[in-house]
Image 1: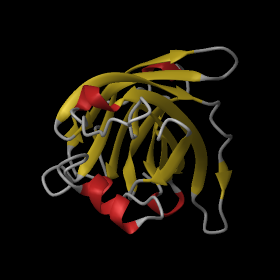
Image 2: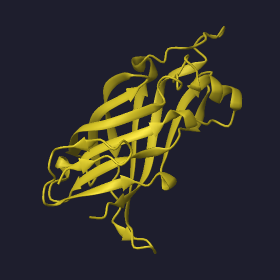
Image 3: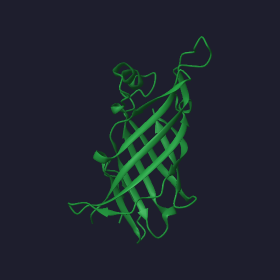
Length: 196
């Protein structure tokens, strides 16, 4: 059996191990948040748009699992319309030309306890760099009232936005800059096991 990404329709020809299962991200119950320093004294927090994608879980060997996530950056929201429009512009995400942020895993490692480190390619504005997501222990599977099997996952990473070409800034008279370079990204997803 091959894996097809529900968000893109693309097919990964690698066959699945016998113990592996395919889980689709439930966009209605998944979110991506971020925070970045503002004026060097506080943080601006916001959310990005719809999250979609696929996770292949290998229950026999979790390190053989795979992740493919897509986030619609056109939905960025920080509770300020002017700031949101600026973040969508060519100064930052340039959503007119690059509407999606993507993450495709390369390697999954076990960490302390049941935590995982998922290393992969993060693409923003057409620029791809390798990052590592810190993933909390996966929630146990449950069955919802409609017979769907669900699991939850939480991950986070911190990036330097300038590595992806998001360099806009304003120097402050008192020193420092208007917008910090370090951006913390947090992903909360609800996964639905794909039915055979």
